[in-house]
Length: 186
Image (cartoon, rainbow, N blue to C red; front, side, top):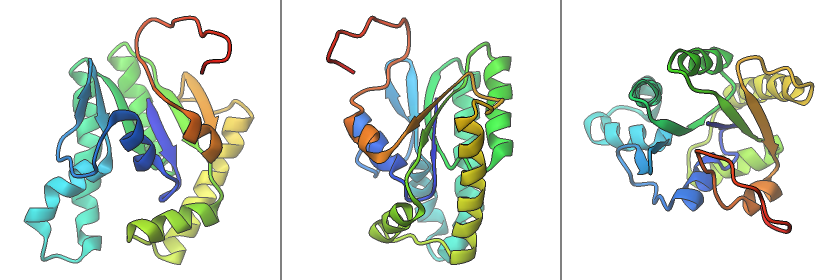
């Protein structure tokens, strides 16, 4: 399952709440057979080694490590809950291909918040994208959301769109056999 959204939308915050993470983790967090993977884990892992370099120089190391960890866990037979931007279509197609190759499915959860909310999230965490970069993400996100609303996100087996209120009500993401939902429960 990939949790996608604009930078600053609240993906890491949601994973922290659902899986009890602190944000200081260096490695994927086990949850039964699943592994919870947030890009902060790779960022934290590289921080000591790349500390003196400007933060922008860390980005390639962080994202290659993050993508590699997701791929490694999938190839190792683990269910994965991973944070991703969702604004890089080639990654969605790549993960879908890998999921099929390993005999699993790709479920996409899109955390759809307005750009102003995502920008405020960037400010609150202290990592603000340049205006040009953020606009590029917004354009790509808008295209992805238009496809999702038409049911046309080809690499995903299922697509769930959550606004901030729905994300705040989410209490768990489970893997395995589906259990019937009791009336009044989510």
